[in-house]
Length: 493
Image 1 (cartoon, rainbow, N blue to C red):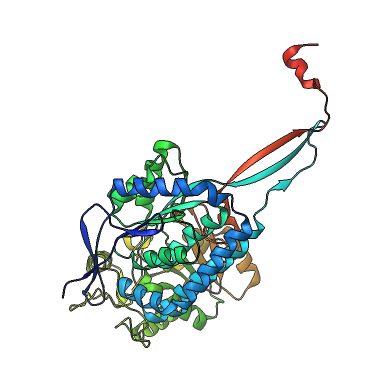
Image 2 (cartoon, helix red, strand yellow):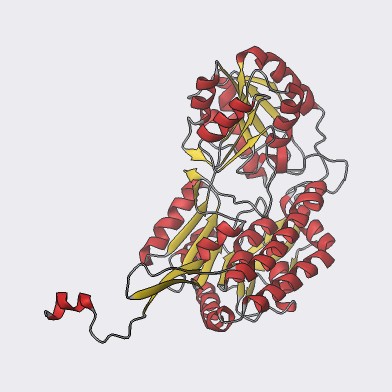
């Protein structure tokens, strides 16, 4: 049966066809065709940016209360259509329905609600007379038109993280979702318009990174460019944006260390490692990827993780009993398996998993790779699959050194029952988020973003507003004197 046809863009408050090639969105768990759409090109990006530019001034001049009201209405609309979002998110990504139903969609609703409220507390700063003849104040304003590119692993959540704070700040947006997973983003744009968002404020262009993505990043009509994805692609986005000096915010890859000290609650650490490594099939920039375990508890940790991984249910994403669905594509699964195979041939020990299954779908088993050397590819490079490596550490100094021995700095966790160790780990591990005795939880009120090869800038929390606001200093004479003392430096006495 042929896939149904849907418009691949949302421009100026209405569905729109792209002007590029036809692309078929597939269900990666079944290999079934879902829908076909025409991808956007540079010409479609031009249309979307022009629409956002026209809509910017009236939207930015609406009161915070008005913008808040629209976003609150959108949150309720997503809530009403939550099961439709769940089904679509599962079908286009292959993730488990439990993850979509309990994490992705509720988290997105909460994030919209948070920024609906936060829109009303955006403020500048009144300052004292730092100059004896003047008073100063700081005015915050919307930066303008925002270009955003989101990845395929969390399509709805990433769209919300990028779009909603920008709208709350008074910006307008052109968003390019991954062409593999555009459906929930298009649904979000339609619901936003139905919830009262003016035409042109939120536009979507579905296209490839090389065409629509690059065109968006280098577009002269974009004031700030935001991107979530791999580090190499993020660097290319930054290079394109530099063509016009466009501001950039990047949330890139990760290689999160999972540091287990000898005094850790080992049972909790084992369960935390499996959950942290396998969330979303390991296709998560913050996923636990490098377990760095004290020599004294190393063997028990490896045995416990292997046993727990072997009990993980991998299968039909729509079955509520499934723990882990498929990966995003067979191509990506083959890439993951190739990295595991190279680790095997280089001397690492595959404790469990590591086989590439046959049959329909892009499934891959939970995989534990032990005795990994620090210079190994699988230790240093992002796998982005359900793979956890384990290596030993020999004391606190060695543990923290190994945790920081990476160009990435997005997330990390430390497992210990010693408050002093916990304090030192949280201070000295270089990552945008350091969890203590947990791994993965993210909340709307707290910032998300990393250092180094993991990018810069923040998503979520009020810190994310910094990406979408300008800072203007206003200085006012309070003396009424025609010629000020400093004028003598120009006009003389």
